[in-house]
Length: 304
Image (cartoon, rainbow, N blue to C red; front, side, top):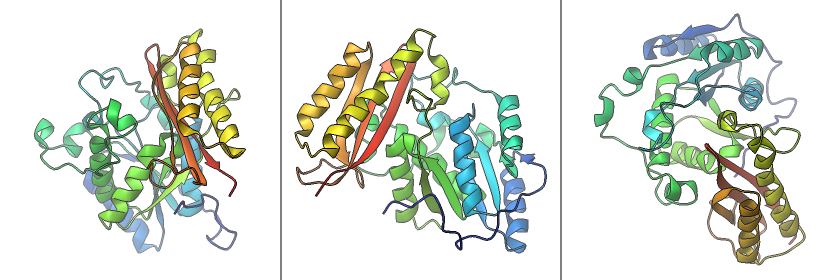
C-alpha cells in the first residue's frame, strides 16, 4: 500500500531543528551519531542520494523532516548500478554546492562514504540483492543489472545508517517499488516512503541528468511530460486500449526527436500488466535525448 507523505497533525511532535550540519565519511562515525540520537529518544530519517542535488532532493529532505527528528543525507555515486557503457565517470559531482543546499535545508548529518567503505572487496562483491521479476522489466530491460546494484547499495546503506524511515522520490517509480519491496522482504526495520515528483514550470521532472541537456534540447525534454499527461487524461476518462495508448505515447516522443526505450501502462502497485477493468495505474516512460536518458511517470486513478 502506498504510504502518504503528509502526516496528520497529531502524528509527529513539533518540528525540531538540530545543530549545524556535520559531515562524516566512515560507517562507524555515522553509526555512532545514530546511537547518540537514539539514546536521546530521537527518530532518524534518511535520504540516500548520488549528489548533484536540486530542489527535488530538498523536497525529500522536507518529507523526512516531517517523519523524523533528525535527518541524514548520504551522497554516494554507486558504481554497481552503472553499466559498462554508462556515465559513472562523467556523472555530475558538485560537492560544495550540495553541502550548501543541505545546510540551507537543515540537514543534520551528511554521510559521504568512499567506494572502499561501501565495497571493501572492490569489484569482487559476491553478494547481490535481487528483487526478481521487477529488476528485469521497463528500465531493467534496458539497463541490465542496474536494479541489482540499486537494491544492493540501498540494503548496505540501510544497514550502515539504520534509519527509522527512508524517503525516495517517485520520479524513479520502479526504483521506489523495488526498494520498498526489498526492505519488506528482508525484514529491514525501515519505513520506506515515496515522495511526489518535483517539476519545472513546464512539467519536466527535476533530475541530475538534466544538466546534460543543451539549451535546444531543454524545451524538447518537457514533451515527455506532455505525452504522459495525454495518456493519463485519456485513461482517467475511462479508455482501456492500453496498447494503442502506449503506441501513441511512443510516437509522440519520436515526433519530438527522442528515442524512447519504452512508454508503458502498468498496475501502480506492482508494475504488472493491467486488466481492462484496472483502476490504479501508472504511465511510465523512458527516452533518450542527446546525452540524457529521461524517465518520468504519472499515476492515474481510473473510474470504476
